[in-house]
Length: 122
Image: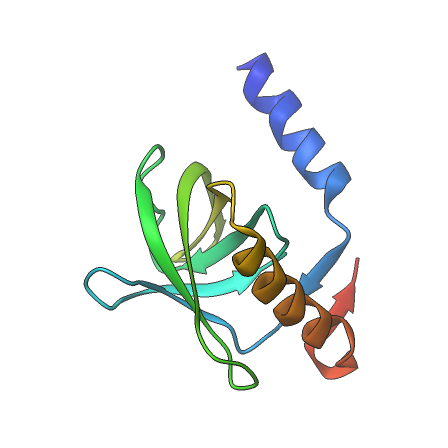
């Protein structure tokens, strides 16, 4: 229990931006909509969805934006927690991305950073 609390506190301390972006996250294997993406970085993201993603499960995630081509990345769910009534956040860490994939994720993040309508500082 203490380890979980320390992990949660560290996660919240490291969080800098919350994106209210039109980023959808889909399971690329079956096109299932997993939810909206928050806190996108080159190492992972949070998914807000109607149900928690199974901790420990690996997915090929397709991150979709209205402003760029979809980005497909493999990631593993590290944690899941209730976010509100009928909604859950799930934390996903990406497998070590290739240089090409890192560049695509950085472009997507830079687009969000440059669009004040997509960003809320907390």
